[in-house]
Amino acid sequence: MTEPVDEDPILQFRDVTAYRNNTKVMDQFSMTIGRMDHTAIVGPNGSGKSTFIQLLTHQLHPVAPENNAPAPIQVFGRDHWDVTKLRKRIGIISTELEYGIMHNLSYGRLSGLDVAITGFFSSMQLFRHHDISDEMKQTALKKLDLMRASHLKDRMFNRMSAGEARRVLIARALVTSPEVLVLDEPTTALDLVARKTCLQLISDVARQGTTVIIVTHHLEEVLPEIQNVILLENGRAVFSGPKKEVLTSENLSSVYNHPLELFYRNGTPRIELDHS
Ligand code: ADP
Image 1 (spheres, rainbow, N blue to C red):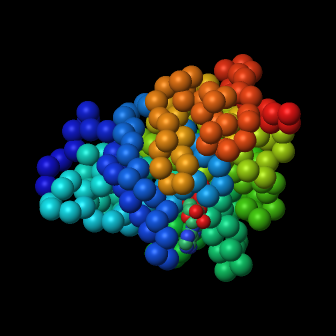
Image 2 (tube, rainbow, N blue to C red):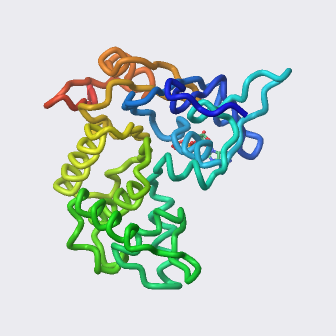
Image 3 (cartoon, rainbow, N blue to C red):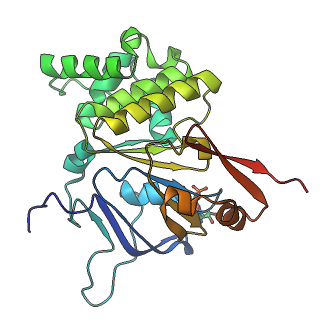
């Protein structure tokens, strides 16, 4: 197996088709994301955003290609990965993860610092066999600080507001200094101020050298740092390319099947429903 070279794209999907319960949920979806190509994958409900995350986390597998064609999904230029190693290079933050950690709290008490440390073990709980070094603790504290969450290090995870929990989870994803951060609707359930803070912190991460991929239906999550957008509809990438070319009133109205007016405020796209 050849070692990955730096020029390899981070993620490459080639005609990815996938099924859930005999329903085609991804249909010949192709995209390439290179290093520092901050990207948003945008689409209405049911367009395939969760399917994309599940393909990335190996919860779902694409249809195998015919005739020895290249694997449909390549990550860092390779189609086979030890998932534990891959998790250290790609941080994924989803509501599923948040629920998972919350659920695990019934078995043990996790502080903000503990949750950040679980990132080293790609686990949702700390176990006796986890060998936690001082260096790990220091790194976790540093990442909490980066997320302006140092004050949460001793607070129980289930005593945090949604905004605080989200920041701790981003710190958790950053402890292994991943090259890529994938965020699934990162501001869902956050209030206005928490949303603004969270987006600002993700912008900082993007500017500091981590490739950010945001999967969302909230256009305000398409940060100014994001240059590329993929618009999904029915499991297909119907428009993809530079943000200003893809996010247009016309394209969005087509994908959302409703007249929409797009405008930008401080570099962030917003939409208004056309009620006429
Ligand atoms: P999104 O995250 O953009 O809302 P999803 O990836 O969840 O979209 O869904 C994509 C498509 O897959 C939708 O048409 C949805 O109805 C279908 N789907 C989702 N889960 C299942 C399932 N378990 N079985 C069959 N179809 C599913």
